[in-house]
Image 1 (cartoon, rainbow, N blue to C red):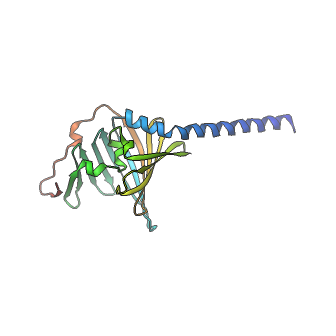
Image 2 (image 1 turned 90 degrees about the vertical axis):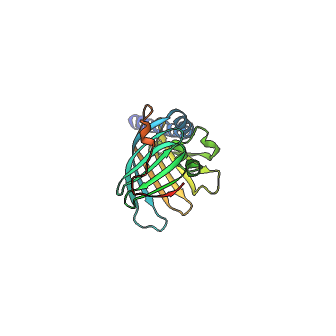
Image 3 (image 1 turned 60 degrees about the horizontal axis):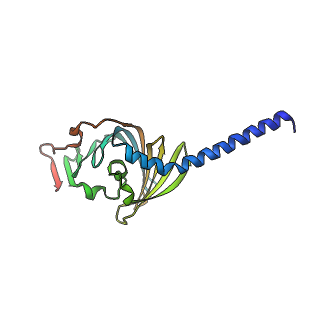
Length: 212
């Protein structure tokens, strides 16, 4: 074999091995990154894009908006497109406001979070009491973690969490009806404690309030 070709093949082999080792390290680091994210990122804000794929195969539903959270239990999740809807957790209750219906739904926050995917974003650092974690491998530049709820009545089967550099970039959720929801965090930035007013909600005059 020509020396130049042999050197080229050797370089490719080194690159391939390096890629495999890096991929393995990334995968092994996924759960550690998730634990670090939950422990270190106490307050954050950003934007998201959401796509819902139904089990029937109908056209995916897309939405986008903004969010902010302050652990534990305080968050604001605002859908801006295609329809406006607002979810606010004030630490005790979860408020859901639908302007088109002029309707507010409220319920205890503990019941609303429980073993749901939202607990990863806004729950306390003991989230592993509610989820069983497993290594999900590495792809698309992200380390993946598979999380399954320990409670059977959580409403979803599993979720995949994609992380890089200690930040959550993507969530893929599969619910009990076979529906898949993909949330991409186009921006997620740690911030100082946000304005407390973000996590307070007063039903608008004339709104129909359902719940406690």
